[in-house]
Length: 424
Image 1 (cartoon, rainbow, N blue to C red):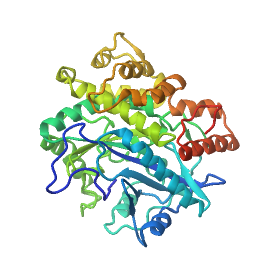
Image 2 (cartoon, rainbow, N blue to C red):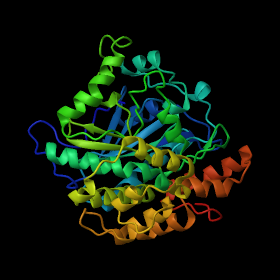
Image 3 (cartoon, rainbow, N blue to C red):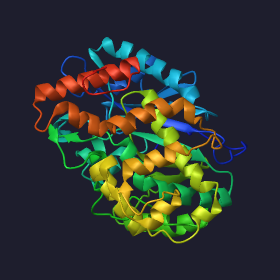
């Protein structure tokens, strides 16, 4: 969906080279501090902080902005960060500051990618400020009072490119890493008050939110492209053509209408990765982002790894398995495992990630030593989705869900990693 605060570049500014800077956007739900029910007060919070009618506020390095619905706020770094570790304290500090402001409304921020018992038809309220009619158009065309539109919080990772060559290489590297990201990042196993059949139910809901117009989501994994022109011709223009009959004014005719797992933002020379579930605290979010950056750089920095044909359908098969099983997904595509020099013919996704992380160096600008403790926790205890499942049990009551998600809210407030039995 649209945004109004580009993280990178602008008229007259030099585009950054690949891996020269990073942009992070993290979405959080606003809930009642006592009952954890969705609280649609994002407009009030921003208005109190930045003035009547505000849709964003800037607080130094970090800015807050609105999302499609009133119970969600997004935090982002306003200028590219040279190192992801430089964002840990600013983001954590802003979470604490916003939670302090929310206390005046008996509310707080909730992490993870989905509210565990939200009813979108009852709880979703769209953002009321809509001067260009974008939100109204989405509501008219799509079934937006659904999980796939109103109950999905994610981390968006923006990686820059300087020219067409860097774009094509970076896009190809990202599309090959996308399938295994849910194995590390899944945090949404609960919806409608019960365990789902997917550890990354957010991506299941997201991928099905525009069924009548399948070109919008595609297979989530994008096809290979060789240039910006090729991307516009083969991916964007077909989407726009399909939408002309229902959007004759072209209100949605923008690159953000494309809902694949990574989308180029040619207006700011970045590719935005969208398949990372929000974790329990900023440090965990950034640790996952660092792992993704390192894996992408591993492929980007070695042209031989980007050779050969990796079909979108096969990559999507791996991705779909990771959406369901996360770290327990079995990967038996030998060509895919060879991308990362994995020695076996098949493995669990967790074992592939362990191999990638253990062999990661700092050439991408990522300091593996900084993130190894959190990576080790994820590999030992599982994705956050797995840890949530372990904590709530097979058939959780509302009371049990509330207790676990209250612990997760504490993890967000205090910047701690969630381990079942240890709370926040």
